[in-house]
Length: 410
Image 1: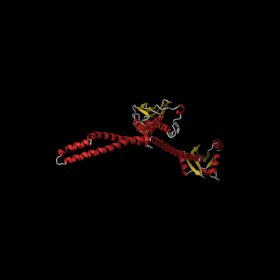
Image 2: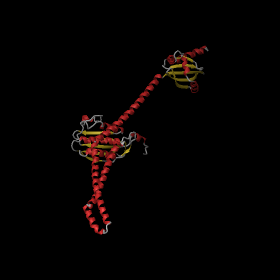
Image 3: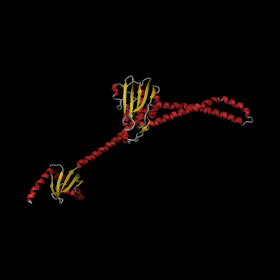
Image 4: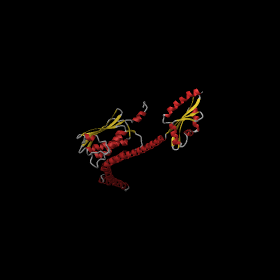
């Protein structure tokens, strides 16, 4: 028996020698649940978690079900707290040469948990900052949109006042015509109620000629058509402004008609362009493009305003559209002053502008670039000083995320 013990003891020593080198607290436990060995790390942990207690008191921290689970499954793991020290415990139960033995490891995870709490706090702070930044970006986007409309306010007012003016004038003329027609009707009524209606025929004809009823009958349809066109023109401008200023925060991208958006945007900026440039359209076939239409309209508005402002006297703006390789594009080319090479590298920087004070915020192209990038697209620029510039907005017909989720048969 002594010889067998002599052979077994060194083997246990060799095994536990390895445990003594680890930073984790390790204990060997016999079949009765009593500690037989503890490495230095276990002694140090016991001193921190259970001051003035023996190291084997660490075993008392294990819940009762830990031993039951470990004996049935071979392993139990959990966490406990002792004197503000968070300890992760792993219990392994088994047999060695028919003798029940257990190994318990204790790991002080207080620092790790504190770091996890700190990381979670940082994560929450970053999420809050991201939400604030997203809100600020949305406000900046909307502010720039309203600033663009503000720059065009006089022109938009003129575009509205002009049709309203002739509708108002037409209403005045219509009021006169109605008065004349009522007078003729009264003359007819008086003749019909007279004793000799036939004798009053000449009076009716004279009244008709004096009131120039034939001219009125010829002019009335024209006045009505002009008035209707004027009201429709105002309605269209107001609707375009409403569509353009619409925020649409939180909405998903939807298939949209870029030509319709382009026409709406042209309608808004038309008064600012028509006295400076001849606008020529070369539209190709465009599929519906998945996007936020109000944001793309803002990009187009910024490019059209810049094109108009780059033309000093009289020039032309060519607008072309097309689609190829799953992408749709809109090109806006002007015969303006062009962009110097050293400036072309900075035109998309926020607050960078070559315009005089009061004519630009330096945010238009920067926001346009961000919007197009958000749509997984790009803006291509080519320019030559003294000749003009061409801006080409390229957008995917279908956003990549949705395209990936679309079944192959679709």
